[in-house]
Image (cartoon, rainbow, N blue to C red; front, top):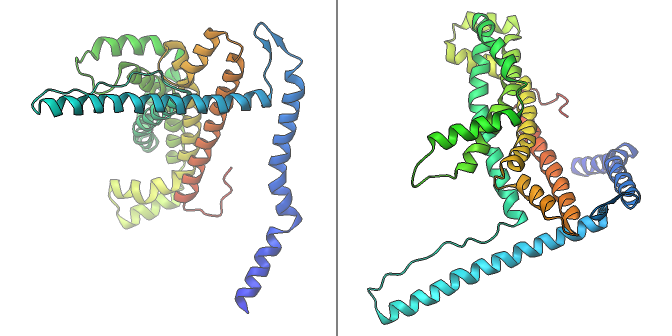
Amino acid sequence: MSIKVISLTHWSRLTSPRSWSTALTPILGLGVFLLLWHLLAGQVQTSLGTLPGPVETGQQVANLVQEHQKEREREQGFYQRQHDRNQALLAKDPEAEVRIRTFNGRPTFLDQIVTSLKTVAAGFLLATAIAIPAGIALGLNKTLHQAINPLVQLLKPVSPLAWLPLVTIVVSALYVSPDPLVSKSFLISLFTVTLCCLWPTLINTAVGVANLDQDLNNVSKMLRLGNLTHVRKIVLPSAIPMIFTGLRLSLGVAWMVLIAAEMLAQNPGLGKFVWDEFQNGSSDSMARIMVAVVVIGLIGYLLDRLMLGLQQRLSWDKNSNHR
């Protein structure tokens, strides 16, 4: 009987007007946006034709997926031909030297997405590894905060347009390995992202730690906790909401900065795809750029939701309102 009651209660919640309103409101907002996009796009004339609407953009999504599949088939055929040729050589001479050449095909749109995601993940993780420990130190030590805060406020507003040339020069001068582990373009994008996105996490972590409830400090002193235990058991759990606010801001900044850096430096990724299509100037270029814009926005949204889900999982207050 209890199972039946619970099921009916759950069903009543799902079918309540409030639940339907919560589910339909985002769909309605998206529908209105798509309708306005469809109606207004046809009114905008450019040198390359009419601004593409949702239908033309959707068609280019299918075309880009097909191009990726064809490129993967070319890659598979390239390696298969090498395999067959090497097998024939070994059949004639078992001691013959055989080599496998790397496929150097053109990166597709999906390849560029993967490249950008790898780069932003590496830059964001590096920034997080620097910002959270530094923010904890600044929050715990007022003197250190007073000494470092002017430097933070000086570097925080610097645009990626200013960092990119400096990072490019430094990396080009120092990273001169004849057999590099990673490409120079990857390092340039990584360090540019790191320099621009670590500040929100650093500042929010420092503020969260500095505003620790005095009662919690008193409990820590009563229990005579060591410094590391105090940070791990008292400081971090209390500062998690502020830390994750900084992390979400930093991740959004990292994604925006990466796209700009890829466009300016012509490093592989979605930014380069957008710039190449702009330079191409074909009849499909505008629709392809629109696809990239939508994908960039969608990935940014999903990254934020991913960080929000992680915050909800790690936060001690499960009933807090996370948005």
